[in-house]
Length: 246
Length: 326
Image 1: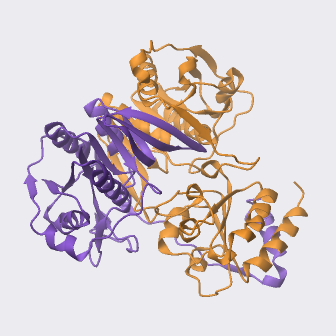
Image 2: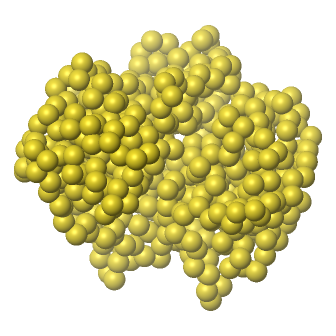
Image 3: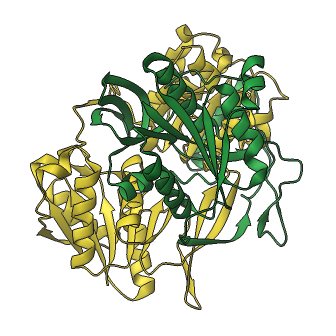
């Protein structure tokens, strides 16, 4: 089974978010980049399936050279090889076109990724790739197992419940917890990752459909109003009469 | 040229998030000097569809195909694309739900459109630009984005739009048929299981959320969270550590890698307020924090706070909530 796992390179979850250049650009200063946490579920589950059924796991990133440390980390966790499409990921539509081009050429059985990136929170790419390739996209999935060699069974979250879906290969799925326990690289993984193939390819033509013009930050809270614990019931009155939310 | 809004049903009624999308769509239509049409799929009462007039919708296209009772992305996309073609719509509005965002993404490909999900404000239209504001960096920032394609698709973040209600206005309801083929249902779910809410409120749709963390000291104390939620008409939620150690199911976990909520009122009980948790809740309108540690970072993001032991404070809140006129 050939599995393609798409990862994005995002600011660590603890990052302070700031902007520069008249709020037109994200301030990378002092920001640590990590593999998008949602993508780690997709990556680990792909490796588990490979270990159980055989096959290969290829990692794909659309990004510039500074994403390579995290691509190497994905190889250290257990992917076999990697492809980097050398381009700034302009928007979801652009990224989906790049993934589609690679996926078509590679003939993968399964294309997995996280349900969204924690920086742009799009929740778009997986469904776009499914649509561009004309294959099913099951998102957001929290369970993924093989029924037989050509059929997978997934459980997907819907508002207020879940759906059980069975699809034939090939398909696209996006991952979220509790699909698996994301792995961290061990020393042997880190050593072998250095020599695993990482291919850099040029982007296919394709335009973005949106343009980020500026950024802003939420207004700061004016400060907390403390209520004495002995008089806790007072809070309920304030919520009704002052905040007017009850 | 009307603005097209996709509305989702639940138990025959229109979901609250879809009433917000309808209100958003009708305001965009008004700004563009056109009307707003809704498209509904599956099991929704006709009276509920007609009532969308209150949100400013003039016409509802309704596909009652029995096979559409459960969500099947390809079939839904076909129905909405048909409605968009019939109405010559250039602006399509969805709720930013798992269904809305999925269908919106596929339509963006099919119609070669610009898609913005997680949108928090009405668009600005000037000088030929169509600019929306959307939440990015997991609630820590907003981005202003130009939608450059001819077709614009917007998925509206829950609880970011006031629901318009012009009582008495009704929409006309017309049947729509998209001539669906068997192949459109190839990825239909085998089974759909809805959560037992026990008469409670679903977390993603909730206006009030009561959430517990490790400060609750154990799952045996969770009845306090549930009781307070019940008195306030709230949904219950929890922090990541609590779902990781198995006190509560994963679908209740709120935070950066769990569910993002934006209710009117979020009450955090015994949650310290790690940055990852804040990312999932910081667009809540009013935040209440109850924690025995006065240094808990959550207090900095709160509107109201009580420094005290959760197990002592919550019973007092339940008592006070019981005394409220409902």
